[in-house]
Amino acid sequence: MSTTSTIVTAGDRTTRRSRRRVEPIYYLFLLPSLVLFTLAITVPGVIGIFFSFTDSIGIGDWSFNGLTNYIALFSDPAILQSYLFTFGFSIATVIVVNVVAFLLAVGLTSQIRFKTGLRTIFVIPMVISGIIIAYVFNFLFSNSVPAAGTALGIPWLETSLLANPDLAWVAIVIVTAWQAIPGTMLIYIAGLLAVPGDVYEAASIDGATKRQQLFRITLPLVAGYVVINVILGFKGFLNAYDIIVGLTNGGPGTSTRSIAMTIIAGFNGGDYAYQMANATIFFIVAILISLLQLSLTRGRNAL
Picture 1 (cartoon, rainbow, N blue to C red):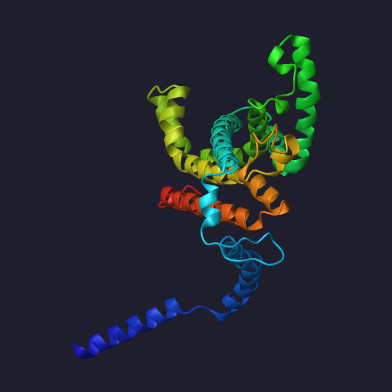
Picture 2 (cartoon, rainbow, N blue to C red; picture 1 turned 120 degrees about the vertical axis):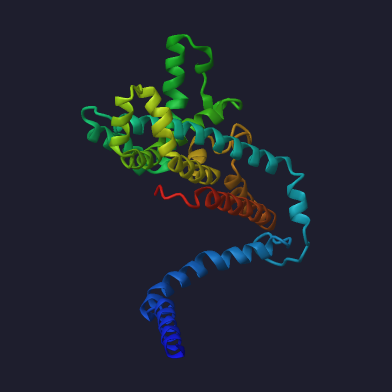
């Protein structure tokens, strides 16, 4: 009996070693990416966090000032305004993008003609640079839309939305959504195509209408895709920069200045350490959102 136990133990040890062993060639392939990531992202990030505790302007002498920059952030109306705008804009855009993308995905996976060609057309905005899209829509909002508003007798459209502090964010949401919808739509299409057709056939036999199938079958089965699109979209919109620059450049005034724009403007204006503290807070917020994403998508095998 002891001999048998010895053989089993030896076999278990051999199995554990074989499972733990990693071929050195994998580390060789990993090393260049690890070095580049460390030099390009990790090291600058650590240096930036270090200088957030100083009074540095980016060059020249500096000295430590502790948590002064961080304390000042929470009483700075410009910083608070940028966070308020960014989060509000992100939430509004996430809702618009996911609703429109889901409806388009449902339509483009149904039995309609030319759906392959339509998918190609709807994906085009995804491959165009954001700054180019912003300049094109800037012209439309500044010229074409006011002309159409004047011709139709709609007073609030007779002037550019981009010049209205209360409505400029609407234009930014429209343009950002226009570019983001295709990518979200493709994810929803993948989710809809993964739903077994037998489920719909059984529901039809039981007398379920198309509306009932949508809300009681389709939506529950693609819930994992909804969660992923919402979290990824929200994280992406928090970093909004190029489209806002091309449309309003943060105006009118600072009503549409995002967090990213505030940080970059501070770097260019000599507030290096102060905006590094802002960037550090923003980084922590992004980490918390990433942890939320992991907790919500853990155990889901939708993708």
